[in-house]
Image (cartoon, rainbow, N blue to C red; front, side, top):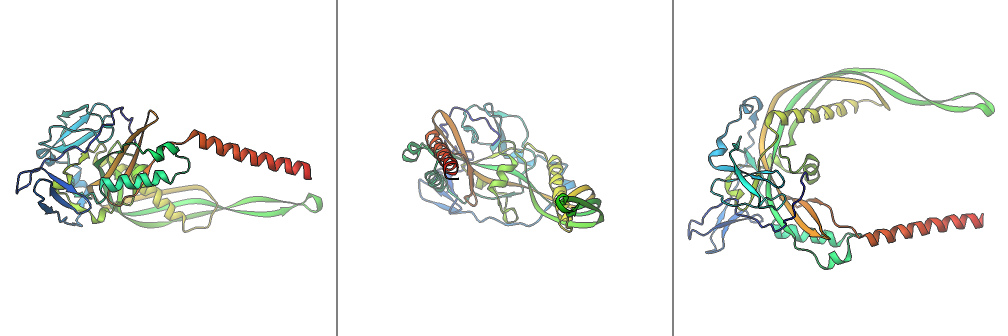
Length: 362
């Protein structure tokens, strides 16, 4: 997670979106596991039935980038970690979901392209906490004190922006590959084997189609972390409905559409090279030149759900991330210096014992 954590860990899920119950005018809360808006005052439930839309957007039209989202949202900037979070225009207060700081200010920056799709949270914050605690208790090198006295885990839900790209590609390639082989040279006592490489030319055409390649559009959670939390089922995402954001915030995208496409092409190029090379039996790539044409380029701007967990232990801040759709998580845990030292001592004792055994009995 690309973020220097602040010292303030007193985070709560703020009402980043404010909606009132149509029955009693009380505040509504989104319940992820039931996909409903729930009123704690009168018990009213509003079922949210997401609409799946498989339409994609033309990339070249999207480069024009409208600002229709600005009419219903505003951007809140965190002075502590630098994140930009999109919240409802009626929101008057917000705690940064990435670092827990209250040092947030409204910015005049436009919200930019309105999301096309959203993957709603399906895993609750309670289930997220329980899963992480279970994981902590199963770790051998986690301090015993931490296992017995689990610190207060603060969980924030945030929608992270991503671009998805579809593209048909047609690649012409040529190159030189090498295949290693061994042969015996010399005779008698001077006989020995040598390894040599036999090179051969390759050329051809390769057609590869890409569907919903995910490119991270935010800055606080990096691409590797998103990959670690994957899969995100973007092809089954719902049409954007701001009601899913009740109680959550959405990070403002930092990587614009054209820059996202440049990143996508780099990853596509690597995949195309792997597909080309998979057709050959080789040991060495001496040279490979690939010229690729991209066409039928489509994209979507999707908000994906991620729980961010924060806690403090031993004067240090720790965090973990959870896929709000599937529950898959990634994170680090405190390590016990005593347990690690004990393991090192045991391993050294075994190694020394084996050395002494070999020395005295051989």
